[in-house]
Length: 146
Image (cartoon, rainbow, N blue to C red; front, side, top):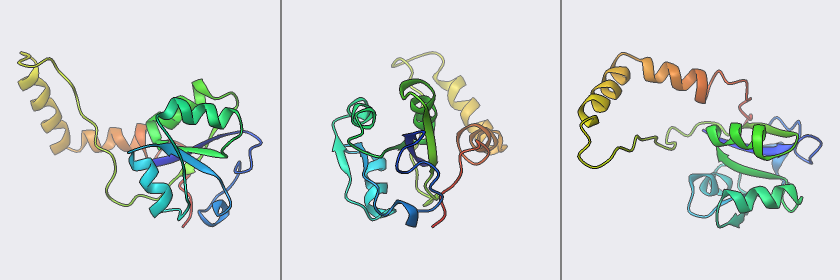
């Protein structure tokens, strides 16, 4: 899921719905699903940055009210990069989110083992449970109301 990162006391701190964000100035990195989400789900014209680092700088300098990133990145940014950082909320799922992958050296002897483990954990629901617990549903980050 996509999420909005800001800081305590910001203009969007405590907002609970998409309607509450109609006057917010939000940004995202160029070429990302986050940028698409600002336009398609929130109906806002985003501030566009070359990367998340530039977006974080703009947020710290109060040039934007919030930065839209994927939820795992939001946890990192709000906990490490942004002083008094908060996750305002997650955007409602559209059913088509980012995909995660594993990168191994070309020809790695581990490829078949890793593939088997991912396939097995997907088939038995373990991966979905881990995703819900640590990356989405049960994280304590509220989903913004439509």
